[in-house]
Image (cartoon, rainbow, N blue to C red):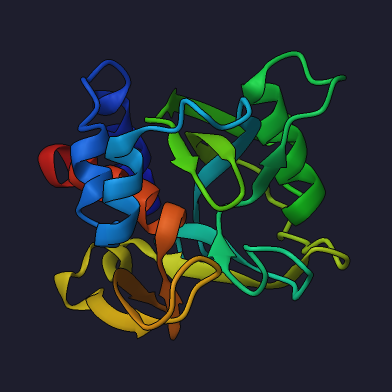
Length: 213
């Protein structure tokens, strides 16, 4: 879809009710659904994080979504595909400020050039004990994205058409930080398997788009 048309239609979703956790569960492994339904009252309060689903035009004006491949590191999200964003810091005014700051740091998109469309449904990630608040935004800058060398292995610039294509919904057996050889629903985007919390958030975005675009 051409970005000009997409950005004009996106205003429709600003005040729509969100699909919520039902859309998340469509892309969550069964073990994760059971964990989330059981609740985590015995855990420590979750850490907070904010991420940004950023849509923008490519060089010929076609709508794309920006994802990142994280670096290898000693942690549960090593080598995974996600949205730009990260954990809240004391200096952040709120969780939106976190998402904008981290997006700027990780991919070079200045907050002044991001039009925030709306917040989405929070996702709790049991293995890392993070509560993630996603936002949807439009990138209006002319400067190319610049990956943060210390944290971002690669940028994944996914066309809207590929994201919305039902043929890119897959299931795959994976060994994760919390289970071995489990069947995981996922997106196949730009040759990468996108699963877990990122897939859950993408599922809500896709459901919104299916009802509005």
